[in-house]
Length: 329
Image 1 (tube, rainbow, N blue to C red):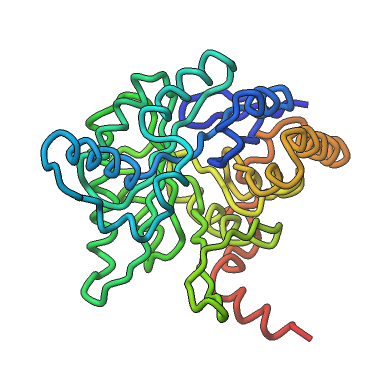
Image 2 (tube, rainbow, N blue to C red):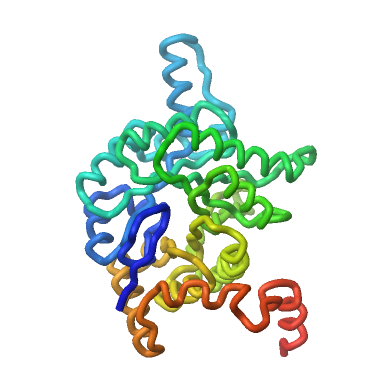
């Protein structure tokens, strides 16, 4: 049974990659993920706000001598909640590279153009094999139009690509008017891969304290539908590598995504819930299903159920909306 695949220029032993999460903060846990069969790992994210916060602290003590705390910090956890800052993040890249043999993909999370992008080069110099840009930018202003948001995303990618020589992927959300057009622009700007999709964590309101409270809900297999649909569509239009994230819990989930046209599947919630050894379970389920259905390799399955290879390609688009509603009982 051949589970080999490729992503961002790496030849991987299988398509299962732990995505950005707290799991990569602990060296022993990363070793366990590798031992369980993870073919690469995406590190937890270094946030633009952390980089700016550190720069502002230096400015405070060396230049200004007055309180200059960034306004943006009021929207994020306090400094003590950021377990590791920028310099510690770079050290963690180096430590993980020494500890495991699988590719280490650093994660840089931000939404504006600026000096924080310089950390892309520092991540490369620290030993990262690739970089995932996680652009978290839900629109919140009435005068901010879609093309401005998309231009900003493309320009961030272009700035990063001038800094580094390692492969760069981009993790996107799905709140775009014309996702295929944006994906094509990113391909033309030099992106090496796309990870679909970022999860937007929604806040709640505490009615007793009258406070806005953040909370995190782990994904479920039902969340797989969104990346499944769009990878089935985009894989027929793009030449860049495609990774699916959100809702990957089982071997069957990975197989569906590969058949839709994904090169790899990123797992997070299932690993947080069941632990690093769940990678073994996912791979075993893949091998069992492939054996039962007489598939010899991942490559044989890849794209076999993409939009161009199914008998009713419109089922991935609007006609499916009508069909589902009319058949529901």
